[in-house]
Image (cartoon, rainbow, N blue to C red; front, top):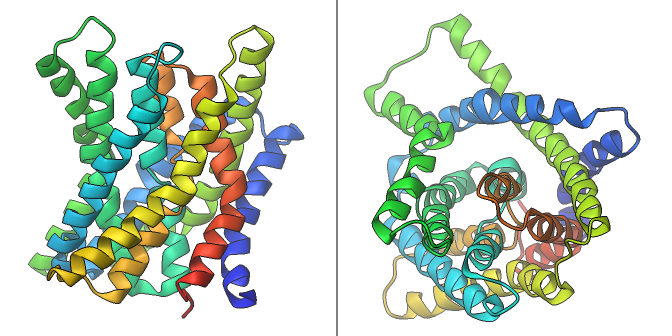
Length: 325
């Protein structure tokens, strides 16, 4: 357990550093947008490009991984919608709650953390889950939210929701990396070194930025509460517990069951999938909720709560699964 904590603790310590930097006003909230842009459009694409070059396509698009993770993602969306939808929470807000409960922070945290914990062989599976969440889970929940808003048909809601993955640089970075690897293309030395430097910056800057975002969202949630826009505690706690406990449990149990019926899923892939599901909620859901006029205060509380508790819950999952190199 001590060895697992020694790997996990630095990642959460970087998140805490970003949180404290904004809380102590060492970093202004206005700077967070710039940090996010650096991570999303420069550092993470370069890191994923390098992984795409060096990871076999069969690992990035493993059929068994795609099938299991997609099935659990759809199940999580349906369960959270069923648990939270009601008079106090309309479909739009319930859909964003389902998204934040089913979408782990695999980009900013999962890829570097699981690579450090389980080795480079884990990366292909994590990226595979990220593609599912960016393309399918987010599009489905956005379509549910839009169609429930009373101004969009299912067809137009789906078309609008699918624009997100097409404009997100992360899937394109993976695709370009795979294409470069398959073609044997090698970047010029100067450009390759630039990509390497940006990719190496992705993990620390992304985690620091995540902490800064969490503090900003906490500040915004506190402001909403003071203005009288409060979310029920149950609507937050249910999703946090579903994200940290139910999501990985479903992956593990369905994965074990599916292997009995012949699903070609290795021990490592199941381990990586379970730990990916055990990650806290993705912070970018807050930006989507704000953009689409959902209850961003509730989403911010879920992200903050899941991230705060994830150090303990994720460490326990990693220990239970024997995740250590």
